[in-house]
Figure (cartoon, rainbow, N blue to C red):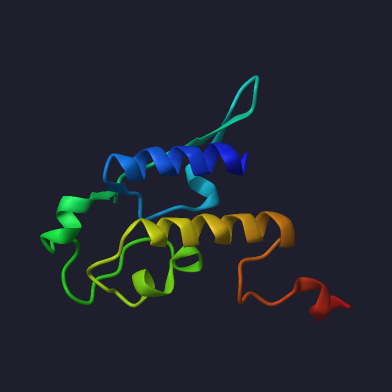
Length: 111
C-alpha cells in the first residue's frame, strides 16, 4: 500500500504538485484489488505557486495538524515535496502503532 502511495506522491512531485494534506482520510482503497489511491488535492499547490509566494497568507496554516511537517505547521511559506514525504511517514507510523507521533499511548492509560 505504501509503495503505491509513495509512487502516486512521486508522480505528483515530478509534475510539480505538492499535496499538503496527506492523511488517512485522503487514502482510498479501490476494489477489488484494494489498490491504494491518493485523493483530495484540494489544497495542493504547484512548485510555481510556492516559488512565487502564492501559498496562504502569512500566519495561515492549511492541512491537518497531526500529519503536518514541522515547517508546514509553523506556517512557513516555502514548503516543498519533503513536507508531503514527512506526512506520508506519519500515516505509516499511525498504521503500525495505532497513533500519530506525540499522541499518548492508550494502553499506558488503561494499563
